[in-house]
Image (cartoon, rainbow over all chains, first blue to last red; front, side, top):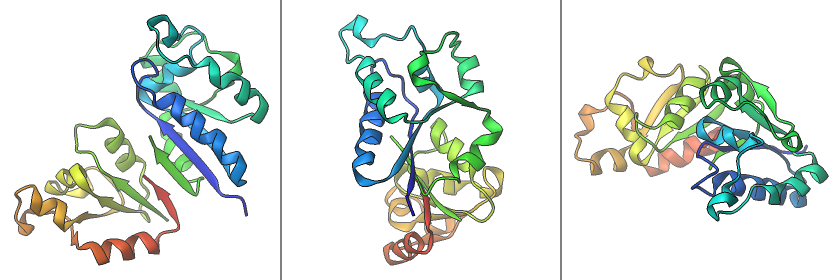
Length: 118
Length: 89
């Protein structure tokens, strides 16, 4: 049976590479017949904002992930309370994030065989 | 049943979240700076059963009697890892 793996980023996409690395790692799973998913917690939730552009500071852009997310349809999850706390108003459609509430997190994490915080 | 690995102390948001989302049947293993949680009664921060690695705890200057959770040596840590199918770390 296919293993379900969740990669979790919790650091900001600007100034830390982790949100990008979470996607790169998830895309690598498709070669192993593993079904990956991605969860953005805390500061990492601004990754899904339409207006987040690390490249404005000369940093690695998030747009490099867009093509592969579209191809694989990698499920992306964010937490409602984090979106509110970090004032994320407009989300990038390509990520098509599914929104969880904080109370759903426990059951959600336990749906996966492996949950890796990066 | 999942094994939850905590390697950050009480000031880290992700460590707190892992402990909050743990279920009663899970096992939590405190390693590295996660052993600072062992100074507190675990029922205050999680529903799961909590263990800590003895080496990390003692290396941080504590006596074994100061731990509020069972301390495991490395063979016991390996057993705990093998026993649990799911992993959150």
